[in-house]
Length: 351
Image (cartoon, rainbow, N blue to C red; front, side):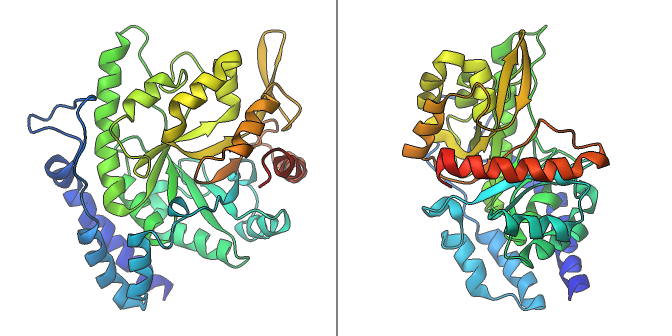
């Protein structure tokens, strides 16, 4: 059964790879006829998923998947983003050295819904192996009633290596969200023209996401060259893209590093674009930023209170960055840290 499933996935992805560029050029609802992108132009049309569902239904018939399940995915009856639930997951970077079965058992033990899996170079699944390995990861997680809630990827455009294979396979496996890689500014060039170019890439990627029924997440990240660090540019880049196609993964740590006292303004500005919340903490020590256990740093209690009282839709992903993920001898310490931070997350956000 597994071999048949992987064969169907590989055929669908190979066919899609050949047609992806043509489809995006012809059907991108965010792009004008002259191939330019207007950030101020209102999008009044959305491409349906009919073509994807037709192909997926034919593929599913060969392996016994019911049409009802596919229809539920199309109508939103199977998706967190169309419900009031907020699945809680843990970012699996610090657990990459742990066998998948142990990761699944750990998720059940600390009462989270699953993981933010690393489907990128050096991660739990190499993107080139996604068609074969990603279904295996999802199946392993399901053995403890856990799942892959979010995929962390290297994808920034439909032309990113293995982008279609990763996203289509993830969607067919029931994954609803994936995190994009970052756009980076060249500080020797004007910012606004670069922002226009990144917006075009994002809009092309949004069209692919919409076709596949998966939501891209762009995480705000602190730093002097990341698009999204000041948040206003991320809002502008996504201004004509529905959050169900690409939304913001609002990272409380990075938002506070950049926003400091102005985080309430930033949060209010981008609130309707938020599709997930990322939780971790930091402390400024002698002018340097250090990652610390959740609740022991400089992320404001008022910020956590705001997110608890007015929760954005979508997943909550717990990140733990204060222990190295590359040293096998620290794996036990990472597990203990996640267990501790999970308890604090319940206290702070009630999830």
